Length: 531
Image (tube, rainbow, N blue to C red):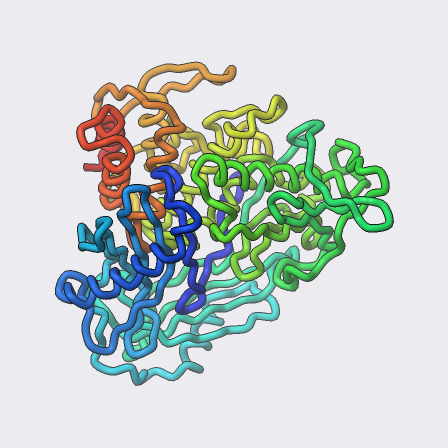
């Protein structure tokens, strides 16, 4: 049986909500007392730098900048991320990052594929109704489908053109959200691209995953407890088998206990709080990993906790992150062999899609999509190592608890029969869960090196694609490099060559150009044929 790949609910709205938080934990952030003024100054300087260097950024008449994120370094340098609009329309593939020194002088820039975002006309020749009808036809099997067309400037391939980006949303077989995003040329009606609006994760868990654990709850006035984490802010709820597309953060029923003892640890438990224990604890571990290792306070770096739902849909054997709801959702499994998919690396994987969405927003298509999935695999795996749980020990076998023996592996991704070990010009044509193998293989080589190795009872044997020998620098260093690359240097259209450049920039920032760490990152990329 081929398992359904793990993935995410893609964000498909136009101009995104502004995330103006302070990331950059691997390079210590500015003090809180000075942060607000420094941040505002950095934003103002970045806007001025774009205006003064319009030719570099392709910034011209009719364009505007929409603030998305700010990263402040301890030395005063700043990295300000913008989305772009043209005559009020979102520019797909127009995002950019302005890199400035402590005095606000422009040091460098990172751009997505689009340089010039201008189109001749913003008046479509193809009607919205026509685009919506075509999108509905491209999404068979979606029940109660609703299509929402949005006029955009589509420039993900570097050539701007007016387009309809139509989102089809409805319900799948088990009550899960289902749909597609279809992009059509607003002048000719030609379909440019289509991709799933909903990306789900399928698993086969055999037991409760984390054993007996300590979880943070909240005491209620008058007695009793709820599964609300007072430290991190997330609340775990029973969805009462409502479909995921029907859920809002206010939906569901909070879990309550008079004893503060939750669940019975049994597979397919009749105690509905049993699945909630794993979900609640693993959400906390994910939050703590990002906070304590990278200085990121929550998914959007705003300190806010998510809503976590268990028992979603009917026989829904999946899990997913929803940006729209700001929720983590898990189903009940298939009712016969698969319990809920709430194991450590799966939960970390799904919530990392939210982190990616709030930062580089890697497009869920082509090589960018493979990098998106690889990023979730990498940080889901790092959450598992970070938790140091005696039942679900850290390894480079992704989703081995819920999809035994594993869904994907890092040392030799091709062992699943589908994923790529090495980059080639055709990698971008693979499913994003299979093209992610290149990024996963790079992460393993940079962390552990090539050759045979046994870790936590698991034997790995990773060969390079160019016959070289790579010496690893440890996963903690590589993860810090990757986090900075994601949050500072990558953009929505970054491909594997761009990821190499982004990670080398990050390694230079953290450890210095020509350092052991810098050279190991470069050697690992060469080891997967990315140069």
